[in-house]
Image (cartoon, rainbow over all chains, first blue to last red; front, top):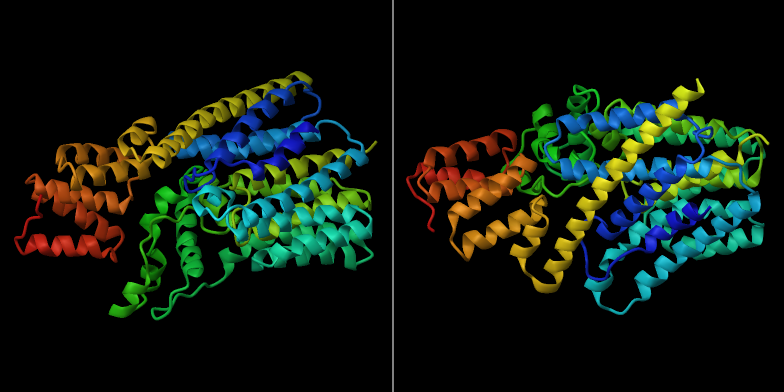
Length: 365
Length: 140
């Protein structure tokens, strides 16, 4: 259980004044935790749930190491995935008491509230506490943590809701994710069936961007739409490699695709609208996990979907704790339609550790 | 079957642990470099600690180009950055400028044309190419 606590402690990890564009100190913490987890996981060889699909995913993710141009970004980004998988294995490997998992859920809610307090009430020295993240990041974290309160008595759940909804509202994606989870978990009496249906929907929602037209016009710039449109073109090329461009390589390749969508559709741009489209640099993620995974891991994303579906369908009992844990995963997956939680160091390991706990509490006793 | 399962599990865990260890070392060096930069503003030292970080390499190249006027060093730094990230347009534009300063006008022209072929809206490259065609050379 110590690994789950350490995973949920990761959002609080930062070094004042150090900002390298994407949570360097958190990344180190997560990678070192992953090393410890991968070593501990080997203590019990009988209990490697989903061994074959995960092994296949790992191999597919490693293959692009042969052709990546920036191996340093590749190794760092791949390490985050592997830290998550190691934590899943070490937490899923043995059956756990529901009481200890409930305590962990309470801990997670307290950590998210603590992060909010540190970020918002720290001394007014912006650069010192900037690495703690922006308010939208905390909204996403709150959306991931809030469903864990469903397993508690209603009074405690509504209290945590009142606290956390204050900063969930910073992000529309977080509000949507929380709303979906609350509906699935509280409104319908047929919780288990709805939860599984909701899980399937949550797995498919990030894929919606692949099938939407995303028309770009020459007179108005929408940065999110433009990034998605260009990334779709990128995803098609990445699939030619089968295993994708390689983890962490989106930001390496995106500048070559920054205006492809416009050129593909032969939009006639006026002189004024040309100035609207900014430089294609500095975009680290397509703001959609499905696009990100397809571009970076190719068919690895299909294997990942299979693994996640197996985790959800492993739940067989209509139990409020299991619904709470599944709700947290569903919330994160809904967020992944608009953000990149599985690529963020601390959100990725809180996701995978929650998945590991869900597997362990839903094991048949 | 159990032996096969054990062998696969050990192999995968060992592979993951190796990647995690390598990733940790890279991440530690990167954070150390940004720590040095934030404390002392010493870009040369920061870039030396993490010579694989393209952003640090680019910042160092700016210092070499505009303060030290050392085009040979700038070319070396930017070519290293472009090995890691071949579509780093600002780095490629500055590399082309250095080629032009050093007299390699054809090399400079090729770099700007390469940028504009993949990214037609980069006004800096467009402007530099236009100036070069007029016969103007960038000043040191």
